[in-house]
Image (tube, helix red, strand yellow):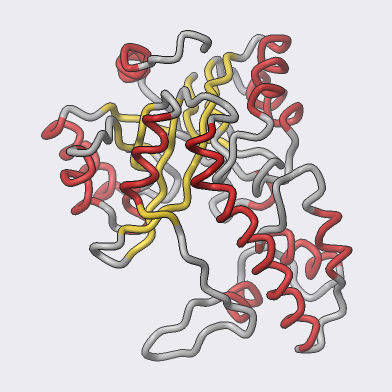
Length: 284
């Protein structure tokens, strides 16, 4: 099995590299892409662990981007990316640092609202990663008995973005994400293959043709957030623009909002062969 979208504790998954790779081995996954948010930290270690376990690790990243033309978020996967490449570091590190700072501000607002948690408690749950995510904050609240789930009524109350009908959550603080075009170019500079991740989640289908023109090579078809209509739209774009069709579980462990498990959404071997043909980095 080939799973081309998976996270570890380096970003916002509850399991370490060792635990994730052991799960992949147990579930029969032979090729696994580690695609943590906005960082390549931990990839060399994951590749080493994968070799020992008999699981081929594809070095990857998921960049938190923004479609400035249409005013919506977008996620770009970079597969077979060079770990530690300066183009990625220079583009993504400011976002990583900003996210951590904003998370601290969120925790301060939550404490001010009367919730009995501490920043130190939240940081401890994110130990071993690049910083604190909202999932770590929710985990701390869960441990204190304020909720029974990471995602649910309390998550919405705290972090909802707000709309015409209801205000933003008490701890919502917006973050400026990376322009999608810059994300695609940085992935290319780092010898990676740019893939549009779960376009159904943020309705990125319209942007795909535009991004093909600057180097987009693939589109994620199989994903836990994709229904039949999303998959059909992604396949249509893949056929029209000769894009590689990928699939992945987007595994986040305990921090998942989909209950997806490693290997539950996979990439067809024929499409994986196409991906390998585009691979420029001879090290992987």
